[in-house]
Amino acid sequence: MSSMARRERERAERHQLIISTARRLAETEGWDAVTTRRLADAIEYSQPVLYSHFDGKDAILAAVALEGFAELASAMGKAKDVTQLVRTYLGFAEDNPAVYDAMFTMNTRLQFAQEDTPEPLKAGFGAIQDVLAPVARGRDLGILTELAWSALHGLATLTRSGRLPADGQRKRIAMLVDQLVA
Image (cartoon, rainbow, N blue to C red):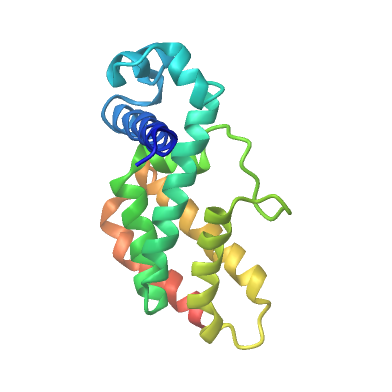
C-alpha cells in the first residue's frame, strides 16, 4: 500500500472516529457534552486535527445527522408494509434519541426538497414513498409521503417528550396505518 493511500485511509478512519465519538457522547450525555475540546480529548488528537476534518460542532452535528438519515433510510427500506415502516421509524427515534435530535430538531444546514439535498435525506423520503406507493390509489404520492413523515415525526417527538401516554401508542399506530392505507 502506498503511503498516500495509507494516509487517506487513516484520515477517513479519523473522520469516522470523530463522528462515532460525537454520537456516543451525545447519546450518553447529551449534545451539550459534545464540544470540540471534549471530542479532541476523547479521540486523543489535538483540536487542530479535529478542525482539519470539520469546521466546528455544527459540521459534526450535520455529519451525525447524515449518518442517522442513512441508517434510518436503510432500515425503512426493508419495511414490507406500512405497519413495518411506522414501527421501524418510531423504533429508530426511540433507540437513537440524540441522533434523531441531530436529524430533526437541532440546527443544521441540511435542507429537504432542494437541489442540493444530501442523498441520505432523499433516500429516507424515497423509502417512505416506496412503501406508500402501492396504497396511494390516486392520491398525490409526494404529499402523502410528506404527511406520513410529518405524522411519524410528530408521534416520535410527542412520545419521547412524554406528551402522549405510552398506553395509547398501539392504538395510535393502528389508526395512523389505517389512515395511510385508506
